[in-house]
Length: 441
View 1 (cartoon, rainbow, N blue to C red):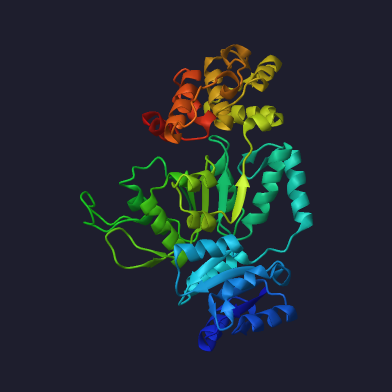
View 2 (view 1 turned 180 degrees about the vertical axis):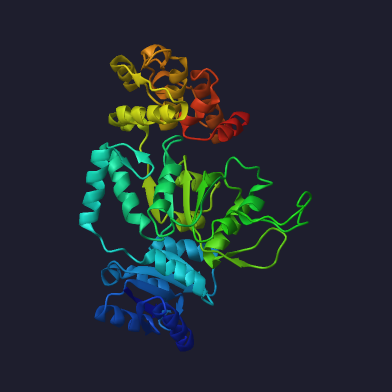
């Protein structure tokens, strides 16, 4: 399957890790110093390097500077002295993950699964592209435009691995559909797929919903409750709007990713979990880190394989295909078939679609209801509008606090959309709940 190099000055610990690695089908070599590690790497290029932080001849992270020697090897840091600063320093330097000693077999298994590179299959990927171009859909996704074909190829490649996936894109672009497609094309497809919107659940309840709780752990906890991690065991857990997660819960999620275990609220007994994590955000996660809203070390853990979804305005070639797809869904549900006139389709193409594919679906449902005959005309479709930034300007004096800048822009956008909070939030790439928070200042 692959070759691993364990760089650890404790011979017994190195031997134990080598045995664990070998039990997962890897060949293994050990080194007890940086110098010996470099010699081993020159002899055989490893797929993964499990690297101790403190070695007799220097700091283990010095090996990350040997880029020519490392080549395509993935580096996983092993340390008994984990700290936020150490982990961020290692991840910034190029490590793909880190393990806290003593090494947990379950955690090591998860990391080896993530770093194992599937053999590239050009024939299979060409088949994916040809099928998508012909059928106009891939998994749960619809479209054959160039940006979507690129997304399909990314999904096809990562689905066969166990890597964490981070999906970004504006609200309404279909991030959950990407997560479902990843799950359905993975080895976990026979197990549960569960989705949780981190911005929609009350901060007082989200910890209980994700991790579960014991009977009597808080007022109203009348019975034991299994959370999402427990119910998704063996499958995929999709955490939408992850950047809206409360800071205290981010710490606990990071701990789960580090140890492979969690505890129900009110319990002291750790429970092992085998769950693939797919996360999503409609805001720039790096901006959330810069704002202090999201932990940088957690982002590095989650953002192993990023996928960015294009907004509908950048894939308008897909409009006819998407419209037929949604109208077919309505026909199956309601029993009456209706289609768009050429003029109606042309009018759809002139719209800016700030709410993306979700807005298109809602527009077509309303137009279907309001139309009497077999054809949907442009009467009940939105008039052509430009993006709000093209029409409105917000005078902001230099030195205005950033929170006030956000409030002013949010208020101006809401005014532009005639107090339609859903469309204003979609145009800004945030949730309606976040929009409401920014308006309060």
